[in-house]
Length: 147
Image 1 (tube, rainbow, N blue to C red):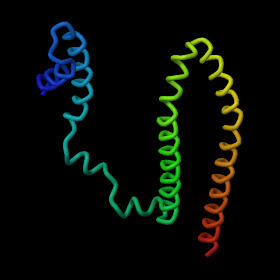
Image 2 (cartoon, rainbow, N blue to C red):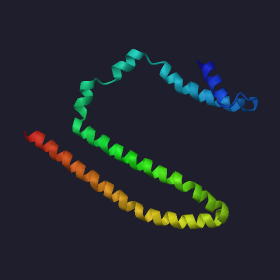
Image 3 (cartoon, rainbow, N blue to C red):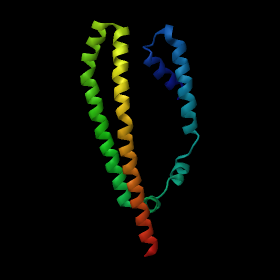
Image 4 (spheres, rainbow, N blue to C red):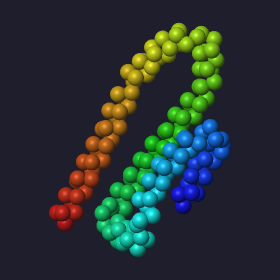
């Protein structure tokens, strides 16, 4: 196994003898990480995993669905932001080349400061939503305990 890890790490470096030392260091890190997993038995791992009933008992289904919806919304927002950045990148690179690094950095810092001034407003909205959801969860717990 260790030889395979060494060969794979050397393959990552293109089998060049000049980069053999780096390949050995990467292989050693991989060997250390995989040695932790090799000494654990499959039965031991399966016993540590919780059963489906235990998982369903910990988090209510409706709460899990709400969390999944939030995560999906955040993922969609993040993908839109990444797409916007990637679309903006070629134009920014052209400006960087034409203006030079110093003047571009100064202008970009001003734009970043303006953007940073708007970010806390978004975070406050997210915090308010989380507080409302926490209140709803507490109310549901109270109703269940009262019943």
